[in-house]
Image (cartoon, rainbow, N blue to C red; front, side, top):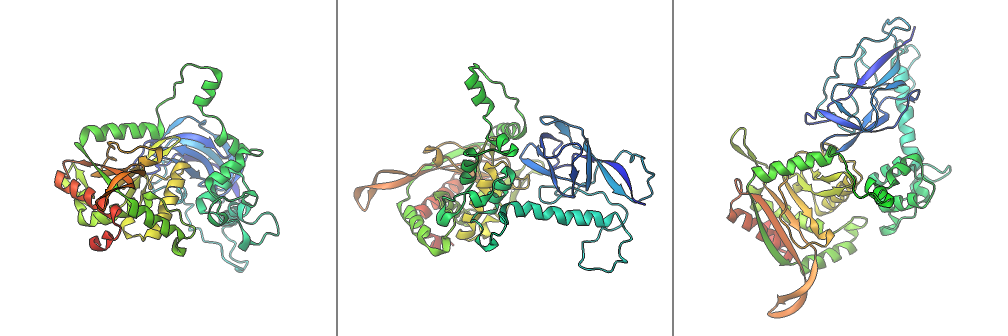
Amino acid sequence: MTVTMIKEFRLPDLGEGLTESEIVSWKVGVGDTVSLNQIIAEVETAKAVVELPSPFAGVITALHEQPGTVVEVGKPIVSFEVKDDAGIQPGTAAPAEAPLPKREPNLVGYGAVVESTGRPVRRQRTLLEPAETKAPVVEPVETKTVETKAPVVEPVETKPAGTNPAERPRSTPPVRKLARDLGVDLEKVAGTGPGGLISRDDVRNFVGGGDLPAAAQEMAAPTALQSAAAQGDREVRTPIKGVRKFTAAAMVSSAFTAPHVTEFLTVDVTPAMELLARLKESKSFAGHKLTPLTLVAKAVLIALRRNPGLNARWDEANQEIVQFNYVNLGIAAATPRGLTVPNIKDADRLTLVDLSAALADLTDTARAGKSSPEDLSGGTISITNIGVFGIDAGTPILNPGEAAILAMGAVRKAPWEYQDQVALRQVMTLSLSFDHRLVDGEQGSRFLADVGALLADPAMAFAMA
């Protein structure tokens, strides 16, 4: 006979040995019935906001922590009433759970670590003979798992009823995810992108102009600073925690550990901007977002082939220089919770088309605060685009563990020497900071000159390849 028992879910290590996380919000309440891997909470680690999937299918009996509470890894955060046929007497509570075993990495998308019931759980099969129903605890979980997958997709992609799936609105996976979070029907959103492509801004503008669901109201609510200003408060105190706390500690450590050197180079990037305009008209790049950052990123990846010393790390503990034979390209992104630097894994292996798609997905995910700890770790070299703020140059601080970071300034029209004449050209200033323990002046200068040469004359890519 199937009976019920109480199980506790303890906060898992969400990656890289993080010891605590803050409960941002609960997606469920006491008494709610949840399915396996259903998102039950959002938590903020020192690096990112991540979603927690449920490790059980059952009914929520208790939420042990309130939003805004910082919880140590291993402490119980939620209890479930689940069905079990392992011989537990009815009405008997399960013994206290031991800390959940680690899964490396246990990140968003991998699912929670599910406690074993002592027998393997088989995947759902089609039209099996009725005899295979001896394990009553297996089938309810499998059935519920399948049932919960459909609602995740259908609210956006199959409604309203009768809509042809082939005619669904054009959008990217991150945009569809945002729409699901906000309860927005993409069928009702007008896309402003190429070919009617729906962007994140289109979704947010739609939310701002209509009746707001609960999730949308939370995301669209005024910030503490805006509310304080409206009330006439003279100052606002905000606790330093989460991503901002981690970033501050990392920047202080980097600034006072690695001896920074910064070099500047102003380049005539008119040929690169002309190439960018031609690529945007190319069928190969239809639907892809191309910006100056796309070309700068590609130039950095090509220049690293000739200057691999900038793609390295100083290992103080082992007194070694670690040379990377791959490039995980970090892109600094300003988010509401602070600066993050997610990276594109193995960016050196990507074509320009794939690189443009990866950059768009990375920046959209970061600005939505959905970058996972895995996205934010393992970078080997970074780019920060200060030009989008109208800034020409700066002295960027190294992302901890990396040897170099390139800041790209704004593209401006300026008088420039061109073919022995003074002409109005498009120019950009590049600022390169590097760790002088790893990179000497010659290496840094050659790398910066190579990046500049590629932007001044994109055909140089053939000579450097």
